[in-house]
Length: 166
Image (cartoon, rainbow, N blue to C red; front, side):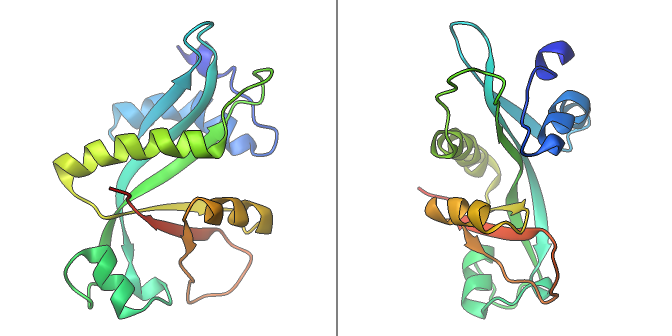
């Protein structure tokens, strides 16, 4: 299995390769996160993958309105800790020639799983963290993600959120 996972390639983000090859199985065994593969059924190539976890964010770390806090929490506009689904990793395999997968298709699969989890364990929003790269941020915004502005400035990872679609 590990040799199959290590065939994944993403020159734009080597962390994606490293996670899938070196961490995904162990994280799954320890119930830290679960990784889902999108596989070509004809040749069993990994086209893309994503990993999911359930986590919480501290509302005090972000410059967000009480209305958004209430919406994310589902109840309390003064909530300090908000439970969210974390899309920890998401990536396309560039080692597959003419890979037909795009972010929209990966997110479609991601939200199919998140909705199943939500039906059993709740949760209203999903978050992801991405590099502070304008084109990457624009791509996620195209699919409905919004930036959660942090209270600290800097060239750090950007947290983005989306209400889980029905």
